[in-house]
Image (cartoon, rainbow over all chains, first blue to last red; front, side, top):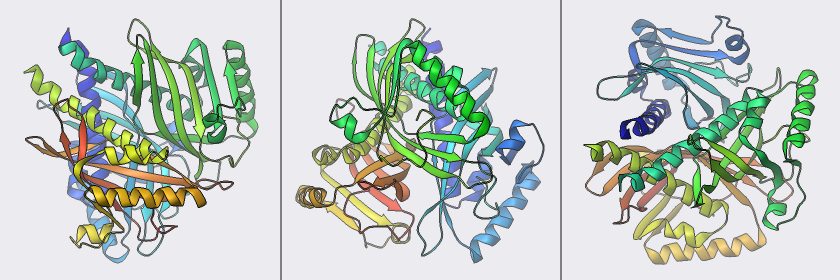
Length: 163
Length: 163
Length: 163
């Protein structure tokens, strides 16, 4: 019975930690850690709200499988050299939508700010993450799928960094 | 003794889930779910900081009882047709101020962004929620009262949507 | 064994509560409570990202020990009279970086908005807190050290309030 009470608490904290690990990776520019937040066959997508809600495939960024993640990481690494900018994710608490077996579906709201050298910080994007998360034996969670659904089609810069 | 340790954890996660369910309802435009976050005799108010701090009654939005909630829901539904905009709530963690019997008083900071079609996302409002929350037998929480205390009297658009 | 499962949950909630108590203190203008979030020999620093990352000592605000905290509190109290402004902290979930013995190292992302009378709310600063936290016997946590690392060197007003 204690187990039943504990499960939602453990999941909440584990999901919160995964969300923060993801945000930290991007905000600290640690792209290997970013990729490490996903399962080996994981999927990442950044998609506008309209396209997501209508089930359309069009996405600003798509990483499906290891090769596409590594391509994205090397593109970003090059861009960080000639156009450095720092990101800041402020993410709301995770909300579990459903949990069946090992798969958890969850959602979280995000606000992302960016700062260019010698400029004031500005709002980059807001939206929600729609996640499918798997826990391994040690209770650590990874994204099998994360879709960053952004609210505005207008994003100050062409989208290079994942949201 | 384990029970004593668990109670604050259970409350924290239940409050967090209620806050996110509330935010999701408004961000997804699901107004029935928004109303469902309140007890049947629940109260919602959006009030400027000065008025709240001085205990003045003036409020930009007041829903006290089922009828006023339904009026608000139908006003919003009409407005969403001719002036669609999407909201995004990014809410800080809940903080329990006091708990006596079944009644919990809690607070959370909010930032709310809005996006009109073909426009970039902008900041709508920031402030704090001052909440009175009741748990039912199943441990699910509902607002008996939520006051959204916004920091600026100047809000880009006349306040139609709840904060 | 239950103890092992519970410890990270208890820490997560206690850290979250400390972060919100800190934010509430500043947002409500309760500077005694702000000081009370630190241990008696606690340290607070607001430092730009570049300086922090390079280990440079230059900091916009430094409070090291009781006397410096009280100096800062009295400066702020005077400024609040002739230039009132309200702050709003929206802080992401805490992430524990390491825990050894009683000392916990943790991180959290922050966004801070400010509102002057008769003006719309604006973004003041974003960044991350790098914290060293100690729990007392009652399980209450205090900052032994909090460094607010802000992303932009350009801050709309000279930094008077702690971030």
